[in-house]
Length: 212
Ligand SMILES: O=P(O)(O)OC[C@H]1O[C@H](OP(=O)(O)OP(=O)(O)O)[C@H](O)[C@@H]1O
Ligand SMILES: O=c1cc[nH]c(=O)[nH]1
Ligand SMILES: [Mg+2]
Image (cartoon, rainbow, N blue to C red; front, side, top):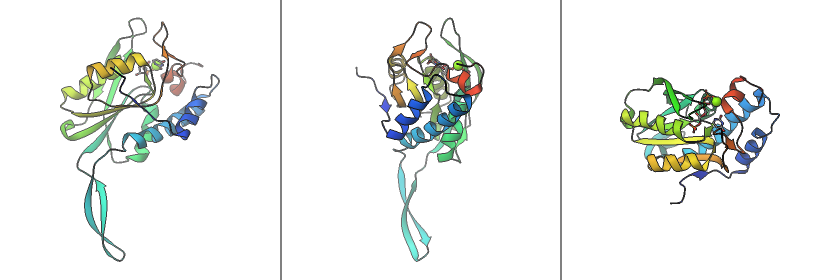
């Protein structure tokens, strides 16, 4: 089975990703680039929202226009690192609700350990846009999708900056209905579950908890 993932090859996306990969990138620059990249990826991820026809009163009389149909959006940042992408996504969808999921990957077992869940009501008729910079083993994304589906959400998409093939395969297998949009599909995971070449620890870089 070929992997299902949309890699956005827009030159601005690839350029910003290249700057993010620099070993010496500062916390400030990493945050700014993460927000900019999130904005561009969200633009691509919302490309297939459905439109409907409306007639409005324009300056010279009635005008036929198109507006987004029906479904409202909830953005779902996975704590902590997903917070780094939130402002960029909200720039495009400022009225979206926000559902927050807290997961910490256990460094030994690589399993996600849930510590927070605050999902907005009525997920049945909302598109959930999950945001997290890193898709590594896929455990965190699968756990988040499981939580959303338990609350009745049926329309889910994930935006990540960098994905590993291992994680994409797991999400494709467990949740084939959930599209993944990424800036890059990288080579593999190392023995500690880090993406190679990846970005290092995105949470630590965004929150300034270690230098590299
Ligand atoms: O695909 P996985 O193998 O589950 O790994 C990816 C997860 O790991 C990182 O978060 P981490 O658990 O380090 O938490 P943090 O955001 O608080 O740093 C990252 O932001 C993802 O959520
Ligand atoms: O490469 C990785 C894997 C998990 N989490 C990160 O922040 N980076
Ligand atoms: Mg981390």
